[in-house]
Picture (cartoon, rainbow, N blue to C red):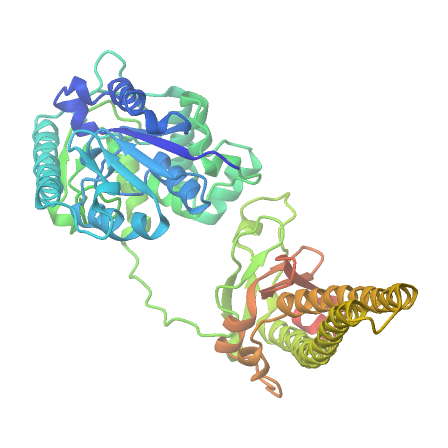
Length: 538
């Protein structure tokens, strides 16, 4: 029998660090929770695991340690959660109440907060004391108050010319002796100057990216990793290229003039990660804040290339496979372009960013791709129709086997009753001992045969039910598209997860419906083998 598991959760936020609450340190939270467990013998047989988040606000549940613990809870690997106080778990009183009153009770999770003397075991079928709700509400108010104070404090520092922002622009790093001062990173600064030179030479964003990628210049994220030895998810990707958006952000960044630009955005929610961009006239600029990388003359010339053009307003293009077609090499979503006659073609944006890569080259007709996908969907509909028919046949077999099993069960009951009657007749003197033994042997042999038949039927029924359960899916929503001659957006959304196209023009369709083993089914078609395909490849 598996042991029950207790999870200790600790959290220390930036606000806690600012106000120097030593008792809230991760170490002290760990000691307090372990002491609590030792003082309660009922936990002696429990296994212990721990999760923590350091420097993360309690107003959001999107914390690495928290998410790891909740994932273990979903997998039924944790039965009890202990925290030092409610604010360690969450400072959002609505979120906290949802977990305490709904999610944890539903999942059978015991929740304990030591400081508040709260144990959900004491509130089974009841609502927590008003003190608990009041304390969580105070925690929420406290967090909003602290957040506002921190925000005001940071703004005051910035107004004084202190660099009080977590991230630094590419090309700069914080002075280790004075964290409010920016220093130039020479190697990165050379890359920035090179980008400005390329822009002044007449290259557009895509051409600059292609030059940087051909020269194998590391991206800003790679440079940052070299300096800070990070292991971010983005750095684990195999193909990393300079992108037009990255180059544009560098070419329009006033930080390279030596100015500190701030108040560009405001946080949408306290503790949240979403920011709302402020109007440009509300931005604040502190000039001559740090050493410049680019001269004002060069910077202004580059800005003319961006701001002298009138913005082009394009109407959104609607097509059935929108957002579903990807490059088979870099796995980036393919873009669409409209040519004469409103014809649509797919192309990989990364193909233009590097001279030597294996991304999809050229472009592919959306009209042709939709025809191929529609034909593949028709094939899948035929297979699903056959499977639905086979499923009904399986149900018929099960009903037949059930009847046979009932007949066998009645036969075993009748033979058992006959065996009892035979014994009574023997005691009444109807049969001799030899006759009784012979008749009993015959009955027992018939019962044994019936029982063997019963076991065989049970195995057959189990097999049939397993097959039925494996294929017991409702295909009505898919089969309703039988007979369609045009691929629609609705149809594509129902059937297709995504489509990948390789440089060899091979289509790999990932279907939304799954096989019985849970793996996503695939269908591979080669465009070049399709009639009139050559006309569609440019």
